[in-house]
Amino acid sequence: MCLSIPSKIKSIDKESNSCTVDTMGVERSASLDLIDQEVKVGDYVLLHIGFAMNKIDEEDAMESLKLYEQIVKNMEEEEAQRLVEES
Image (cartoon, rainbow, N blue to C red; front, top):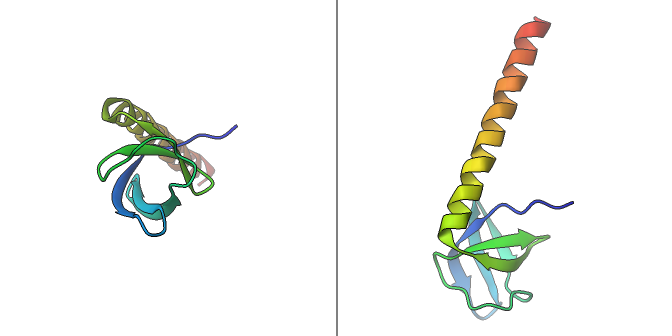
């Protein structure tokens, strides 16, 4: 199973058909070769192994990002609790 985190397009390089995206504060490059929709700076896309696969609307992207942030927060709290219990 693969989970895609919504990534916001920060810039597009038409010559290489790629873009720079921001994924929860981490910037990376992604190919646009496999996406069948027109995208522009500011759009949200889902990535798989370095390729933008789907464009999603901002509302869905924000909802997903909130859930991912909660998952990360819960994991950090569980790890902190585990460390306290071990010491």
